[in-house]
Length: 93
View 1 (tube, rainbow, N blue to C red):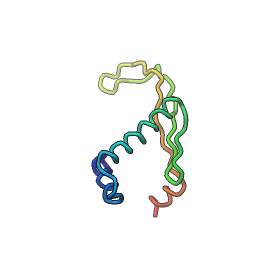
View 2 (cartoon, rainbow, N blue to C red):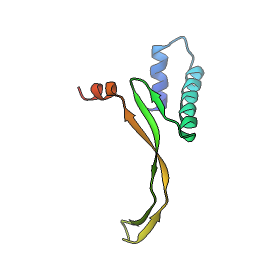
View 3 (cartoon, helix red, strand yellow):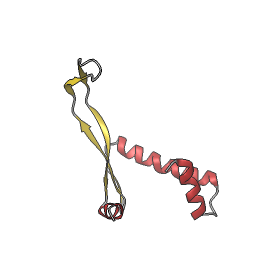
View 4 (tube, one colour):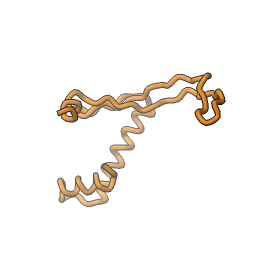
């Protein structure tokens, strides 16, 4: 679902809120998740799932698939998502 379609769906559910209020709500929500993940905290949304940061180790022996050349890949952080039990049940019905 794209951002505009999410805003449209929220507008249908809450007609008393205007477009700019809904955009602000979504922006604040996303910024809050980003801020928490940057400070290495988990973001748990009950009934939906958990976002967390996982550190990926550096690799000294990775290969460029095009040339076969050995390259170095530095360590980095990745965002991971673990769905809740309830969400897994909904998706697997």
